[in-house]
Length: 423
Ligand code: LLP
Image (cartoon, rainbow, N blue to C red):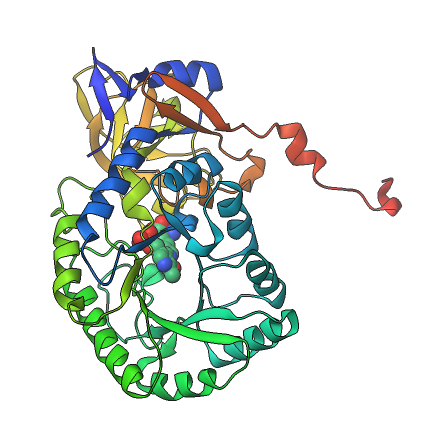
């Protein structure tokens, strides 16, 4: 459920008309609803409560939406953070997320990133290879601290999602193979500076069935038992993120957080560990829209081309994953039509929708790309020398710019000229 509704025929974010934001900030612009973020955080927390030992450790996957204001809303909900770079780590800390609630994931952590994370005293490193364990051991020893670690295990389970966001098959780059995990833990257990506390798994994103998750978790449960039997003091099982959200109302609704939580409680019963989660999309996707203005409508051979002022550089998901985002008129006339919706970028991939049955729109109308709060603004680029998309946070009848539109002058001034070209 979200807080984007029609009121008196105009689409609102909570109590704020999107028209007012477009007027003041210009378009394209991302608009987030704080009440929706808080609601999703609460729903997820309630859904998984009672799983494992003590309170679950919920770390928001910062990559889904790293805006500092968004992170601060989640800090207020008691969330930790799952980070994958120094930049995400610094953002999470700056937003007030306590370091001991931060998990550092990713296959390519550098020694500098490890140093930074250790200096802050983060809660857990999810290691993805033995060379990485050796590097962290060396860095922790040099700093004379102990790094709390888990190995991310690749359970070789097909998550049944888009190939580009599937991570738990043996041919994917992620994690250590589950069948060699026991030996890897034995070797890491002997490395100085590492405290092996957990096991982690994440099999992919936008998962629309619980079965692959259950299959993966079941394998993790067996591994926890084997590791205990081998003498490792495993206290954390990090079950990753990945639960999908509804994008296309014509498709079956993905499993609810409550169904997911019930499955987790059932599968993890008896593991006797604290359970950690790294949800991203589920928390923020429905909490954001990309607001855009139609530049013009051009005749097409099959359908009219709606040319929006948002493009693939602002919302990459449709180009990259053939992702489907609902497109709504901000002041719908009640008429519908079938159109192709594209951006101004000069490539055919800059297409949001083909033959889409949608609210009829004309030049200058505002449209909203729905469910754009996750992996939206954060994946934006300046391709075609288009400025990075600004972001706005709404709370009740208040709203604020939480990332200003980048002036084109600043974009261009970021380049510098070598002296032989007159610089
Ligand atoms: N944990 C790890 C280690 C991850 O790699 C990810 C996402 C998550 C948690 C959060 O997964 P979520 O709950 O959001 O599904 N850009 C793509 C999604 C990439 C997901 C990458 N990893 C998209 O727009 O669909």
